Length: 422
Image 1 (spheres, rainbow, N blue to C red):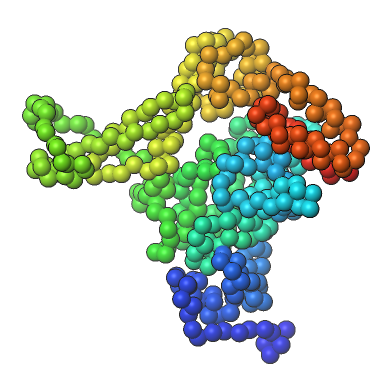
Image 2: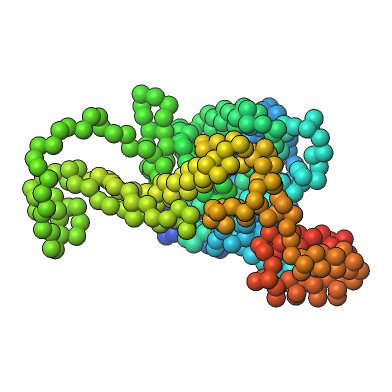
């Protein structure tokens, strides 16, 4: 196409809300036009650039053996209830209702949808391992959208999901994707570091974030220039500086009536701030209890790292107690999840003395459901008209306290399928 026929409109003025250079230049070059907070229209020029980036991502993912599919952006509530993330995901999840008052969300990610697809499509172990990927618009209702498309509410996202028979296969594919992402960023000409990160609402036991090194970023990372270690500061581990020297003076009590911070105490005693210690109280659920972390005075604890400490304490206590009560089943303390063998053992266990929240899955494994659950399920399968399904849906809403959470999720998933069948 000739340039005279191509739509291209540049501007000289820099909008007041464009804070960083990339956002300012994209607006001035006519690549983007703002529609609302965190929502942008890609101009013909901007779309050409976006498609080129997308082509590089697609080429590398295909070369790595991943298979592309396309999933819907609007996802039913029942799938998110099944994973427990309808509430857990928080305010970033945009929730909507259709004309039948059925609840949906605009997908911020697609774990629920791809897992539903896989459980219906993968019928044999011979189909594994498999890695599906999706390039599609996502939506997260950011409190404060910033930096143009870097923190927009609607954005184009490549997400990949793999399914495996064992941990070794999973680890191999994780490394394959790690290397693939590195090739993508290298082809795009970016300076980046892959860092250990928190898994957030998506869940899991390990995660890496690929950070482009820039002064305009919001995240801080800690990395070594002598090795390949790098981590988000929220998860970076502070190593001990070495052997602790012997005490230089006897322990004594010091009155600190008005000193409320480590800085105040250090000034009172005339010592360096790093010689003080502060207590950080961490409180988990009933099973974890109270954990007290001692942090050096000149350092600060990260909330995510602190939450990880509580979660680890909970998990270790849980596995230790299981191993003590039922040694014949071989529960492993270092496992953050239950293997199929562990689940099979739990099916045969008697009442457990551990906190019930840690064993919400036991009820499901044993098939213990209430009479109300069976009654509603039978009526769902027998319903032949929309009015009947609507009546059952109202009963479900009214029976939240009478039904277990797992029963609610199963019934709502069945209800969703019956709606689609009608």
